[in-house]
Length: 227
Image (tube, rainbow, N blue to C red; front, side, top):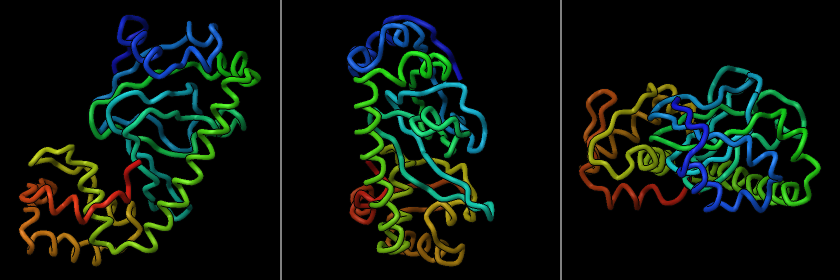
């Protein structure tokens, strides 16, 4: 992670996302810009969150771990959003793990500053209410998607979110991890990969994926794991 404490990029993100309209000046002055590389961890579930984050650019993967140790994909962030509303308001540890799947820029603010100046600031509280309401709707939608959409479509959406329109990319996760993320079994995932290969949509060499037909991959993917 590269930390950029000040500068024009930070000011641009604050202005573009209108953070100065929802946060008091004391919080704005504490903002720092962080740049995360592809596959770099941003948050780890069940650890103390020392910072509140605003996601500005790039792409993030948000997932949870269940008691049996299996991970479950919640969603991808591709548009401006925040990390830490629940943790800020409840003093809980991080409820999700977050990984950058392409270079991403986030603004971070110490939790102590947020608790002191933001938790009773009306404009910020209105933002939090709206943000949490949208996240509840998205979580319900994605849960329904995992129940109702075939494994083939879930896998296509997962691949589409990772390839960033590139023809060739490398998955960092194992097949077992991917099957956990999208709520299926290893055997069903293998069949879905085979189907995509048989239709000439992708070629697979271990974790290296070559996308032969972006259009068809997009059709299968739909909007299952995208905001």
